[in-house]
Image (cartoon, rainbow, N blue to C red; front, side, top):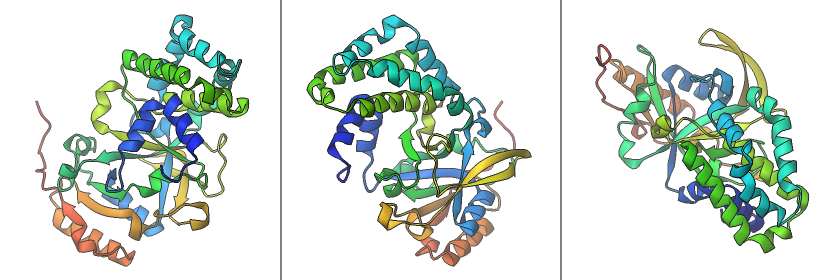
Amino acid sequence: MEDWDPAVVKLLSIFMPTTFERRLAIKGYSRFVHYTTAENLFHILDKEEVWFRNTRCMNDHRDIENGIMQLHQWSNIPESTASLVSALESCIPGVWQEGLKKYRQWLPNLRTQSYVLSVAEQDPDENETGRLSLWRAFEKGVVGVAVVVNVAPFMQMTDALMAYPSPVTYWTRQQFEDEFNVVTHRILANKDFLSQVNKFALTEMVFLMLLFAATCSKHPGLHHEREWRVLTNPLLWPSTRFIEHQAVIDSVPQTVYKLPLKNSPDDNLTGIELPELIDRVIIGPSIHAGPIRDAIVAKLAEKNVPDPGSKVVASGIPVRAKGMG
C-alpha cells in the first residue's frame, strides 16, 4: 500500500479492519490461484481475456445472500448498531443514516448486478498439488486446473477497471458483530481525523463498508476456500474496459463481462498480461495428465509465457473411481 493515499489507507483501516489486515498480509511473493476447468483455461489463453460472472450464476446461486442476511439482521436491531451510530454521529452527524440509506437503495441492484472473478490464496505447500477440497468441487469427468497468478495486479490502487478486490469473510454471527465492534472502537480512536473528512466521502465510506460486508461474505463452513473476489457492478461502477457479452455456460444462458488482459501503465494497471500474470498451472486429478500438460505448455509458449515447461505440473492426486461412502 506504499503508493496509496495515506488518508484512504487510514479510512480502510478504520472501516474495513479485516480487509485491511488481509491486504497487509499479502506480500510481493504471495500468490493467488484461480481454479477453473482445463477447457476454460484454453479459452482464457486463446482470447486473452477473463470473464466476470453474475453471482446468481455461480456454483451457489445464493452466493451473496449469506452476507446480505447477516447485515440485514444486524442493522435492523437498534441495540446492535447503537454504539457504531453514536460513534459516527460524534464525528459528523447524519453520516450513518445517509450511508445506510444508500446501501438499501442499491441493495436490489447488488443482488442482481454483482459480477465477480474469484481467486484464492495459494499456500507454498500447495504449489505441487493444489488444494484437495477445491479439486473436489469439480464434477466427475471434468478436468480442473489451478492457475497460479502473481498478486501485484490485485493490490494496485487504480480505478482503471472500476473493479475492486476484497477477501471473502466466513464469519459466524458473533464474528460479524465483533467486526463492527472493532470498527466502532477505531472510529472513536480516530475521531479527530474523521471529523475533518468531507461528509460526502465519509458517507461513501459507510456505504462501501456495508456493500463489501454484504457481497463478500460466505457461509463459515466454506472457510477452507480462502477466497478473494474482484467485484464489479456495471450500474454502480460503469467501466469502458469491460465488454458485456451473452454466453451459454453449462446450458444456462447468462450475461458475463469480459475483461481483456491488457496493461494500461498510464492508469497504473500493469501485470495483467499473460506473460507476467501466470506463475504456474497445476493440473488436477486426471488419467490424461500427460497429454494435458503437453498441450498447456505448448499454448503458454504460443502466448510468450517464459519458460512454460517449468510452470506446468500435474498434481498427481489419484482419480477416485467413486465417491466416499
